Length: 204
Image 1: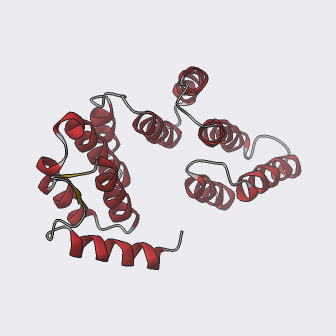
Image 2 (image 1 turned 45 degrees about the vertical axis):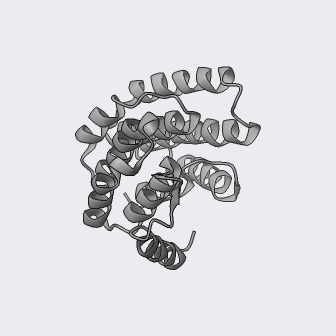
């Protein structure tokens, strides 16, 4: 989770890309593609990352090419706070893989939270809950990761609504308890996002 090592990894990947050392056969794995995009946006190297997404599109295997392309562009636009374009692209992704489905729904969750769309958050939570129950390919830890993300986001949203409305001491106790749960849990997807949003809420 330390960015200096993420920067080193991305530097190595940039060196390997033109030498075709990251290819599996004649294609780049869609998961390698995704990992490079994830590293690029976390390091805020948006211009390079967008160029990479377009440049290496044709080197993805045809069967997963469009999904990978649209999903990763959505990630880029989300991180650039272009939420409308991110949502448009996510709606084009065909969820043939649990990782795409859950990561895409997580991005939508964060957009709805940012836009104060509580009903949309609840509806999305219920949709994902059914998916987690039905998909037999998911591990127990994956189910816990995303269930925790949605439940904690709803708790955080309620704290945001209640701040300045309920007794401050009571609010602080609820806030501190949630922060403790999130900080010390190893099974929460998008944990750093949750912690960052809690820090922002506490300062308001």
